[in-house]
Amino acid sequence: MIPLFRHHTKASSQPRRLTLKILRYNPAELNAAPSFQAFEIDEADGMTLFIALNEIRATQDPSLQFDFVCRAGICGSCAMLVDGRPALACRTLTRDLSAQITLAPLPFFELIGDLSVNTGKWMRGTSERLQTWIHAVEPVSADILETPMAPELAEAIYELDRCIECGCCIAACGTAQMRPDFVGAVGLNKIARFRLDPRDQRSDDDFYELIGDDSGVFGCMSLLGCHDVCPKQLSLQTQIAFLRRKMARLGLN
Ligand code: SF4
Ligand code: SF4
Ligand code: FES
Image (cartoon, rainbow, N blue to C red; front, side, top):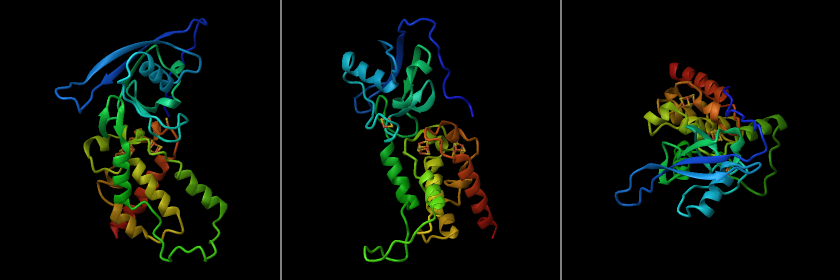
């Protein structure tokens, strides 16, 4: 795997002066055109891009738009292009970047303004299309004892459930840039998760109906940009390869 960022060791304890070149564009403004705007700030110890952006907004330009909720790599809302690569702003230390940093919004998703994109709208649409909920035959009832699940299986499901829907995998995906209907690694990972869950009664034929075409697993070009940029280090390569093998067999029948 390619290392995410070069680590810049500081020769002296002097703080660096950082220049953040940020792509500014507000689609709601009449006649607005995208352009880069440079902001300069002093680097602080342990500074993340999230902290840097907040400082710029607080001291230089309150109109700068970007998203965050958790500041801890959990909510998935702060993803953006950092020097051309999708990453979480709250988990990216400025000391791992050069003093000239370029920030742009994630491509593919609807732009709200500047670095803010509407990943939630796309994620919800994809979840509805892929029916990412447990399809149980038995009605759920508080009177029925829960069926125990092997800890290893519960762990495997939990591992795939760690996706934070940040959109980095979609922003890094060549197929998604060409096909707006492609479900991407995030969608395929969700199918892998529900396929694993014994409470979900759907068969592989049912899953084939959802992802057995070029907008699903057969549209994937296997270049694995998704795997390289996923901030949760999900095993996207393994999941996609496994699903493709399973679905290809069904397609031959
Ligand atoms: S699979 Fe990884 S990169 Fe894609 S949305 Fe989930 S956490 Fe983000
Ligand atoms: S491996 Fe497939 S899903 Fe991942 S980035 Fe490439 S085309 Fe997209
Ligand atoms: S602010 Fe929640 S993941 Fe960055």
